[in-house]
Image (cartoon, rainbow over the protein chains, first blue to last red):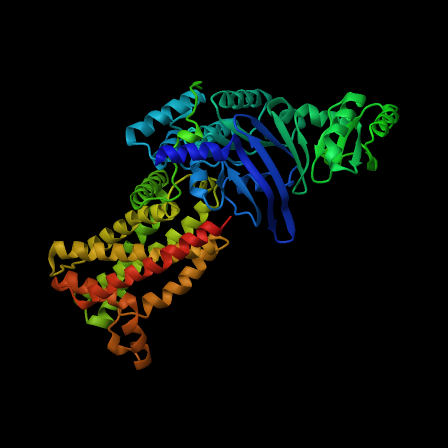
Length: 318
Length: 271
């Protein structure tokens, strides 16, 4: 039965670590998260970029079963965060913005307690704690109470605590905020190593540079909504130029139109199927004339044409 | 960090429910955490060490002559009464500390772990039985020093002590509930004291019931604290299990059955 179940899971989950649709969470009048969609492929680093108060933490807390979404749904490796929350908790590690470790206890005691809670035996828990402290360079401080830990040490211990069960998905909420450059680089290396062992990492950050450095794909969040999504290069390109938006009359011609746009403008275009809309960065405005002629000759009729200025509101934050 | 690959999702055995055994194990681990914390900050034991000493001395010498003629004959009345009052008062601290504890980041981690939802609460409450034990032992010891020689013998005194600890653990679920729903630790203290003062003083803990007006006697007789005090007196002074013993245990069970689920629910809703 187990065999069948696991096969079924494999088929169902595909290789999405996170699939979130239309997540909403309000606090009083404040729509902290207002319809967020996120799709994270397993084995990648995904960056959620946004200014303070954009809704990053709230989004992560919903994905990590700490908050119940008011609307929308989210699945972690195919398991619903509300209905199968206990399964989801077996698949994730969460490192919050504020170290979620016990101040009153020592580093070792913290890790031993978390290990015991995760079902490790007494000796096993001690071994695991020692092993993780070694890995994160905290062995010397193992017995000291956390009150005397620096921000970087605390953050490392917090991450170590998230890795006890070797979760396939790790949430890191602003893992480098407040760290000095050297510690920040160490954190980056750690995150890259995590992904090499097969984990998926979803991290939030306020810095475009950090997201670009680490993440395979980035979602930009502002006012509780995803305002841009793509690779670091996509985002940088979309910032650099205006974009051309075309609406095609006949949706069946969408693909051909997209190929034409890419060919003539020599750029990568994106298609949003629901609106039948093609968006392409417009580096050279003169070429648009060529494009329009080619489209008319091919018999592809436009419903709408517009140019979007590069002043993306979320850019002001970075 | 070792570069060994982690176990793929498809190979993991996943369940969406927590077994009873796991709930108990998780709760004991959380209790272990509570004990470590007490060891780290022994000053939080001040109340359970000082209160039994001061209250026992004070109440016995103030009321002894007036109520029972002399201190010696008041001791069998007052020691069980003060024991119940002290230990139940101590259980308020459980709620207050839980409130303080829950505001810390570590509770986020507990929530994100695949553990029994009840464990962080049950564990904290379980660890606090150490506080009740200290208060119980100290109260009986003070009584002994002042000349209290319970006729029930050591074994029955021990049973009486355990009964008080069990009932206080049950009552601490009420204060844990206040702790979870209240906004601040000091409001927990306020609400709890307000509830507890009438309960402990409007009982047979300190004075004979027949000196009170009729309407008050009616309340004192149904007050669960009175039943607990009577049960302790019966055990310690004459070595008998009375009907009050059963009522106390049933009352404790009812409190846990009602307040444990609502507290866990409230805890889960808090963000």
